Image (cartoon, rainbow, N blue to C red; front, side, top):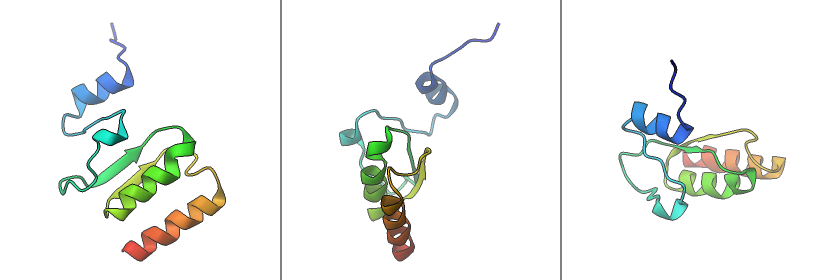
Length: 84
C-alpha cells in the first residue's frame, strides 16, 4: 500500500539536504551553501521574495505564475541580468 504524505513531510524525508520554512524570517539568504531558493507561496509574495534572493546572488525557482504582473517580471529579469 502506498503511503500518502503531505508534501512537506515527503520533501523532508526524501531530500535531507533541502531546508524548508514557512516563515521567511527564519531564512538567512546570505548562507553561502545555499545555491537556489524555491519560492512556492501565494503570487502576491513572489516579487518581494525573488528580489531578496537575487540581491544575495542566489538562483531562484518560482512557481507559476512568476509574478503578479508583467512589469514585476521584467524588473526581476533585468535585475537578475545585471547581477550576473
